[in-house]
Amino acid sequence: MAIRDNLKANLDVSLAGSNVSVSSELPYSVGGETLYNKNMKYLYIDEDNIEVTELISCLDNNDVNQTETEITGFLSVDAKNQPGDIDTVITSILNSRNAISNQTIRECEMTTENTNDVITYTFNFRFVTV
Image (cartoon, rainbow, N blue to C red):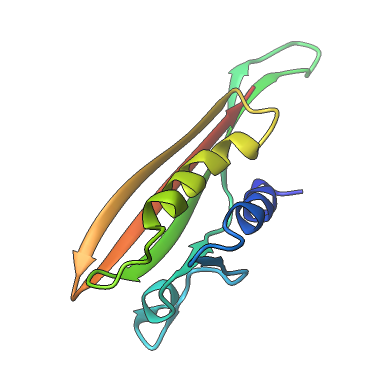
């Protein structure tokens, strides 16, 4: 199962009952407008971006590799009428990184952008395993 699927499953549970829903669609554009700006209060999670780096090359072909998976999530809300539980929602999204097991590193950084009375939260998840 892909890390995105596990992350989405955890977010479905942790955001149930909140003012934000998790979309199963990818965050693509329609007519030049991104879905997360068109459908506010929906968290969109992009596909896994996987990079494998060889750490140790062994003669018996049992090489030691590091696998780094990055996933980006997007959430847009009306800047003037933010959901009352936005702090709880953000905390739940940031903490969802801990639901992914068997990872050496589990990180999530958040950035915000204000455009035309819309706040877009961008969540950059990073998972590393050796």
